[in-house]
Amino acid sequence: MTTLDNGYVSHESLPVNPDEYLDSVGIQARFRPTIGCVIPAYNEADSIASVLESLLAQTRLPDVIHVIVNNSTDDTVAIASAFAGPHTVEIDGEEQFTEIYVHDIGKNPDEKVGALNYGYSLVEGCDYLLGVDGDTTAAPNAVEALEAEIASDTRIGGISAIYSIDDRPFTGVMAPFLIAGQRAQFAAFNMQNMLRGRNMAVLGGQFSIFSMKALLQVMVDNHQQTPWVKDSEVEDSLLSLQIKSAGYLTKISAQARADVGGMTTLRGLDGQQVKWNFGAIELMWPGQRGDTKGQPFHPNLRLRWFENFSMLVNGFTRVMFIVLLVASLSISAFVFSPIWLVPPVVAILLNLRIAISMKNRNWKDFVFALAVVPAEVYMLVRLGHFFRAWSKFLSRKQTDNWAEQAKAERGSGNAYLTPVIIAGLVIIGLVVLWFQLSVVVQSSILWVGWPILGVITALQTVSMFLSLARRHRGYRV
Image (cartoon, rainbow, N blue to C red):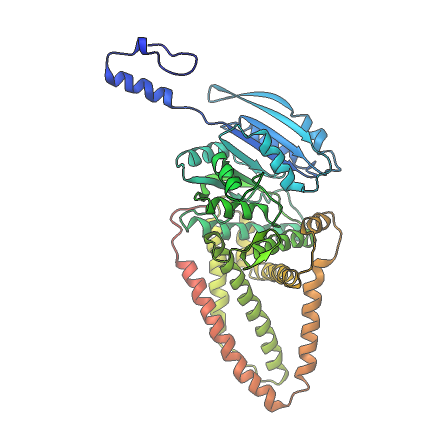
């Protein structure tokens, strides 16, 4: 039996044995899909070398890698160019080939979205597009795992890796604290998605693989010339919604892992989180804002609604507890009850459960979970991001949150202090108002306020306990 150059079996040499023929057809039917990797890079001089080294160390190399440098003012192009050209790597005795191209597209008004779409135009002929951020490194088997998973089911439009942050390089106090908080935040979000049938609400652009057929369907359904559009502050969330609406599944990988770049300053974290939250609110809110209509009932946004409601309740209970506690102490009316220890104990156990669920956990994760104060302070920081995002959205003020995040990461701007200033002014105002009231009115407020807080806290505690008791089914995040 011979095989022609076009890959088909020659009829003149078909084996007489039918089983042998079927085996030969099976062999011919097996093919290796092509993966085009696109790396949008904006001022990634500190990390782009590690990203490319990570890709070249994969057990399954992408067939081609395009680094799309945009709006950069550092040495990203020069550093990436050192990797440009063909690369042949021997893996398990077999040679794999890839080629790295570096494109400097200069000033680009569409920023990351423009870079992604430029990269898409370069890999249109591939079966899959692998999107990798310029500060994300992956485990050696990540590409192989993503390819195996997306190729196993034609209904899958995209799969995201399991994200975390490598905390080993960070020293001092502030950076390790913020990184520990972000690791716990990623872990909780990843586990929520895994327990929802591994249905991922957001295919994060940090390290995700997309079916080119799904991207094409998104373009057709939404009358777009490109897969990504700058209608939203969170281009990956919008694309995930569109892929889901096109009839495809959006999943989180069961095995592929990647470490993303973390924020090491309060200013930088604020810029990133406010942009993310603002973009999510735009997608959730009913009505037309810009070119994209809000989709409040979209299945990918259910988890977003839950997160926002949870943050609202967390903010309300904390403010109410502080106000009632100070008010009670001011008139010597506070009586401690051991039952108030139950919610923080359940919260500690839940944080500990999240730490245990991490694949690459370490002592810092356990300290963050058990020491109470770090997790509580990080929650207050997140509440600041939450209220800042909602206030920006409700004010309808037009702001470029991409530019704001870039500015914050450069160490400029003090907007992250706004929640602290406002909270301080509110507390001062409440204290002044409180002492203007009569003792009878003060007692009445406390008599009503504490039971209300008690009921809400009890419901929160039940919710945390249910999350604590939920089986993780062996998943590791």
